[in-house]
Image 1 (cartoon, rainbow, N blue to C red):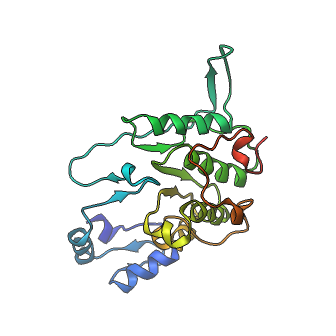
Image 2: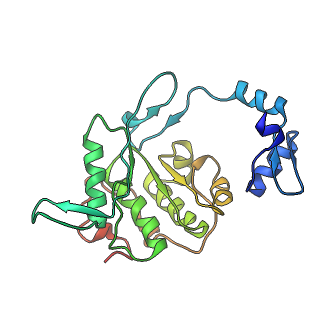
Image 3: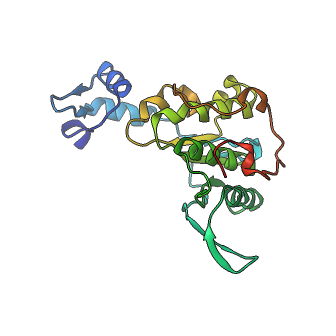
Length: 228
């Protein structure tokens, strides 16, 4: 079994601690090894009723059984403008509109950014604004990426504000964050809430954000700093 003999590289410190406490081991070249008994036990005890929550419970995705779900995605930097017939760089409003289209289409069940908001220059602002545009455009489950570990906390604050509290979001996490190298431990510290950790980035006006209207129209780049 490869997990038992070859294992995994680049495991996070928290993952190494958990696996070693359960009977695993870490080699001198920092490969994390999983004993066969632990792997079989994990497979046997793994949940079979995985759910991706939406902000609206009607959009929860039950991933069990033989269900098939469709998602948006792609991250295109350019878009064909139907008004002037030209190709141009995508904007944050294009991303928001894509999320609104996903929200209205019964055949699309999950949102991942279809376009890149090229009018947002700062990396931290890009991560935050991308998540915000998606979450304001659709009540379906949203998946995003973070570019740096330090950007995780501002996404957590955004989700807590939209859910009404940290506890409410942890009970029904409606955002999944895909992490680059180095950010996985920050995400793990978020517990059940999918996002968390500690960073220098901050959501502008998070304390006043409350529960924005689902019909919010981001006339000025969703109202977040860094776009424009």
